[in-house]
Image 1 (cartoon, helix red, strand yellow):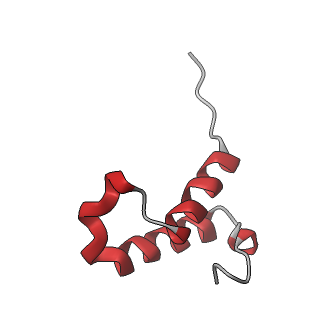
Image 2 (cartoon, helix red, strand yellow; image 1 turned 45 degrees about the vertical axis):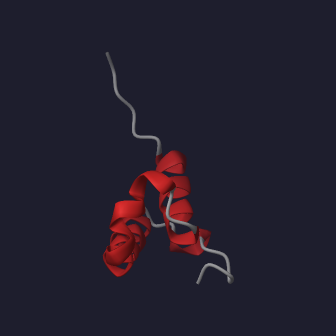
Length: 57
């Protein structure tokens, strides 16, 4: 079984995390800054910081 890296799905995941914290991650609400850091870092590694809208920035 060959696995592929789905870059677009990862970008969508990180941008969604920055917009609203999904309910399944509500326990992390006190760590929003940490979650935001890792989401931004993930977008940076993927070279997709430009995927953020002005509203999200």
